Length: 178
Image (cartoon, rainbow, N blue to C red; front, side):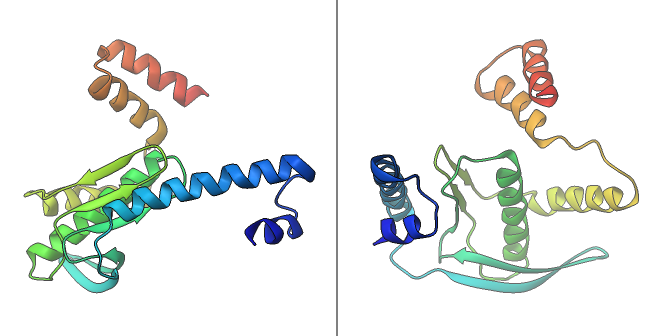
């Protein structure tokens, strides 16, 4: 049925190529759903709305995909640095709210096609969140040097692949320059 809908919408190539593309997409979706289901609790997720006060800042948040012991964020796409950063900041908000007596889980998962990122309890979550709020406020006043793709390339090269700082800097420069 999805084949007919996608074909009618002009989303697939004509003929055998279109049918083959559809089968490939369907396999990709089925595989992703298996991974998602293997990490999802039996309960239905909920959306939690709350207000969080940190110093002079008030954050009004609505966080979806919340289960009793985990929050799950998912994308049927490769993880991008922006996705990881957004998931991490949301996680810090959730942890800080949890520390302030809101019932929220202490774990978040970002599930993408190419990776699963897990964020756990962080005792200094509020301090880290204050740092991000400070950067946000500075960014309103003047442009910040913020290059998430190059920064991610550097961190991945240095911390995951164990390359030297100079090799990692070269990797980041290549990412930055395209």
